[in-house]
Length: 328
Image (cartoon, rainbow, N blue to C red):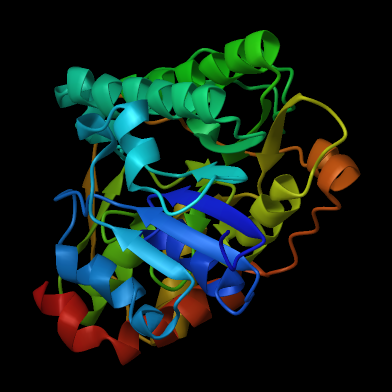
């Protein structure tokens, strides 16, 4: 009999959002936290290791350096320390633009990897599955803000794989009684953000005297959601039991244009940006904007971080780790 009352399996747990979840849960002595992360070369391994500093002090954290692509459901069951109560599935090949160049790799990880975990849940009796989906599933849709019931028209392979994951979860919920909660994340940012994402890229460029690459005229906009607010929503979804299947937006219900983003970074850093303008990129949607009414109703979700405050928090983290971030 394990000393832990509950066991959470968190895939992608050493990544940006996953590490914030682990840090929110690690003090709970009743929780076994098992992390599967393959430290994908999409960005440098040392940046993910930065997210995990201090975890070695916690006996309830088990970090497995494995790829979902290389595991069967049976093999996964053999390497885990105890029966799983909740799966928080964050692992995925990330990035809209890279997915256009290698759609098969995205399908392998994001669709087949998700199906393997669903098979594992069915075979071992896991009752609860929280899935990280994406606002990208909405595609180009002028009916803003987006409700969960909108018609979905993904325009990138990445977005298609996230929609496929939602539907695979619906099938598993219908056939096997698995509770499956898909959370559509809207442009998550904050300390630890991936280096390929706009806020990180722009601050790194401005701090090193390089130009900022702006795709389009700066009028595109995103619903930027601070990572602590996203974690609040994820943990509420972990505890949600009212219905067997839900798709829920987690956003900030507030849009920021690309021009506004650059102006905010200039204000916080005190440095004027040099802009290098390029045409808009294939696969990028012009706007994202979440209707979070459903999240408020079902999860008591209440994103409270103002955009400038969130960027300030990221900048402070960046300065603290600048030597590593500039040379990784």
